[in-house]
Length: 385
Image 1 (cartoon, rainbow, N blue to C red):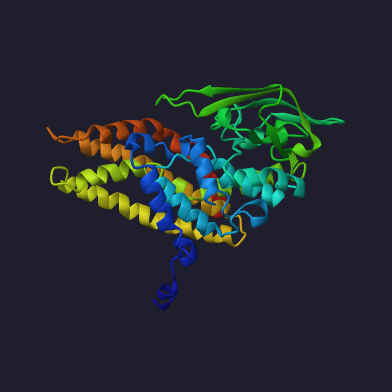
Image 2: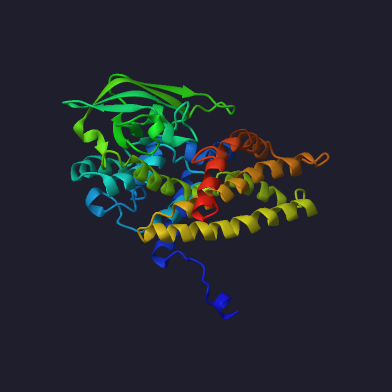
């Protein structure tokens, strides 16, 4: 019993928690007139001016060093920011990937010149990145990528294709996982990462419309794209190690818990009214909250490891897998609750928000790693396979 009493939950440091009040005050005004079904898009929402305003306030690149325009703060500071952005449904999709993983990846593996060139505009909310990982025949099986960068006297020549690349049509740059030696049968060997300027000749970006009518996913084609020597990030042949560290950033934050949170809050506001409260809805609210609370605690524990300089790959995969389950439960359970009511007056905005989240929710268990891949990683990490 004494051992149990000695356990403590990871807490956000007071200096980082203090960010919450000014961020809430700003978002309360900035998003006051934005309807819930629009705010529900949040980290797929695209608004360049909003991103620049966050940059002016020092809320992008907050974990990057001050010498590159960042805030020099801990991973907990970014956690607070992200949590509030998602809870309010802020349109952060334009700068999201650059802030979450491209910037930290460049900081960790990039040359001094790359850091000086790429990081300051990321922090200003002016430079947007996308992720070049999945390919038509290498989605979940990422190690079998075929896109190839061949060394030349001038640098590299890039050929191949990427798919499901979020917001590529709005971004200036991509960090792409490519093969620089060997072939697909070599798996993790021979993989490297390169930074691609998407305005270069030979790059073609084609958006893919989804069932909700959005077109934030893209196909990206490379046809003899000429890259300079400085396109390589990190060491040649070390791409798998680097991309694994990058995915830990992608899988561990609040965005893997709160993709449906705007819908949940809109529904909860309805349930708190006399007309909306039923015994079944109260039980459902408790069910969702009782799952979100421990998952948030787990996410904070992963953040603590990131703040300590660790790369918690297995832990991040676990949080992402479990978090996705709750994110997908929310629209399905809310739909069951609302459509079981006979003659109840339900606000149109709540139904519109439910409609949007229901259409995009299947993608939650695909992006950032499918369930099968994540559970395989977890099993290996636990020594079960």
